[in-house]
Amino acid sequence: MSITCTGRFHNGVVEIDQLPGGVSTGPVLVTFLQTKPVAAGKKVSARHDALAALRRLFATVPAQRSLSDELIAERRVEAGRE
Figure (cartoon, helix red, strand yellow):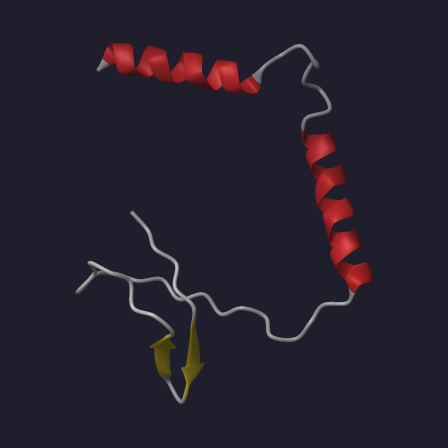
């Protein structure tokens, strides 16, 4: 299970805005978010670049082929071996 909390980092200390209920101890991941706004043109360009990369990656996959169905079938075969 994972819980996401907001907070601030200041002088080497992470301060969480609101502590999650039912959690007294455990591992955490801290992600530092970009605080400077990115120009809208850069965001759109980055999305277009990512979309173009995905289209190139899956260009050889026929439209009628379901990658999800293939993944499920593979998992069922693996589960049958266990």
